[in-house]
Length: 344
Ligand SMILES: Cc1cc2nc3c(=O)[nH]c(=O)nc-3n(C[C@H](O)[C@H](O)[C@H](O)COP(=O)(O)OP(=O)(O)OC[C@H]3O[C@@H](n4cnc5c(N)ncnc54)[C@H](O)[C@@H]3O)c2cc1C
Image 1 (tube, rainbow, N blue to C red):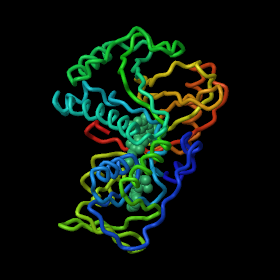
Image 2 (image 1 turned 135 degrees about the horizontal axis):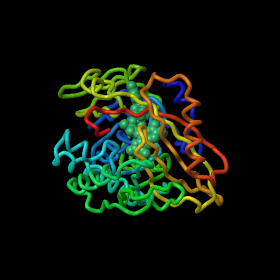
Image 3 (image 1 turned 180 degrees about the vertical axis):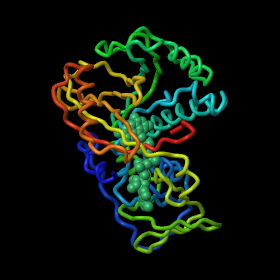
């Protein structure tokens, strides 16, 4: 299944390429070794290096070559599993923590972009959660109340989302979400890590990780990184095959990128309540067009043979709701790890 994913190219991969870094070819030491250079590992490496720690960041592909290059890059504090559901599992305090950490993550990305001068099309943008025709508005009211209890006091019910063709009716508005071009961001973040003295190695597969007072990471080529601390940021852990693996399930998700005339779709992040749901955003192009990105059609990994059907269904949903689409230019898929605590 991984091979199928790797054969597809996201909008970001088609429009930006991050230069490779060298392989690790000697033994090195650091305060911290971070394994995995997706959004989790690169952010960790940057924050540690910018506070004066010596950091080695290792990935077995290019930078951001995992799921981070396949994301649709909605930066949100509106959570897929709904605040009223999270409250049942984690209580109001847990749900406040989730809201606060997601809000702070958007703020943090914005502050890194500003302080490091990263040109990555970052925008603050409102998000809209809308129900399906005929669905009771009760769910939105419950989510509104739970979002307020979680501290998201700016969330409100509005009569319509700004995109008329979606015919959302009353929907929930989450203000000040974010979006960016992920690979442009990672390109800048990589430079920032190196500016702070961080060392990045690509195409370096980690074979084993040993903890203890002094940790050791060993690569496939038998080189080692000795470090006081090791951070495993490989999306799915490579060091502990039990604790987390039993609490998460891999899902495939699909996305398409369609050309629409500039200005024909109102900027916003949009999510419906279908199961699996659709997620929608825009990305501006250099000509007089925008790319409309629509994702969805998720299913558990390994349970579907014909991926093409999923893109076709996305396309027909897209054409029904956005009649000004001219061409479908991108189709890609990727893996999302769903966790049992609802906080993925
Ligand atoms: C189509 C799609 C749309 C999505 N949309 C959104 C969205 O709108 N908003 C959102 O928040 N999330 C979204 N996601 C989810 C998001 O992309 C992921 O949660 C996120 O990118 C995971 O980042 P990561 O750093 O944990 O993992 P990854 O980006 O996968 O990085 C892990 C890295 O570890 C490396 N690695 C693994 N094993 C080893 C090893 N043994 N040695 C060395 N390196 C190793 C890999 O090469 C990889 O580069 C979406 C995902 C998909 C597929």
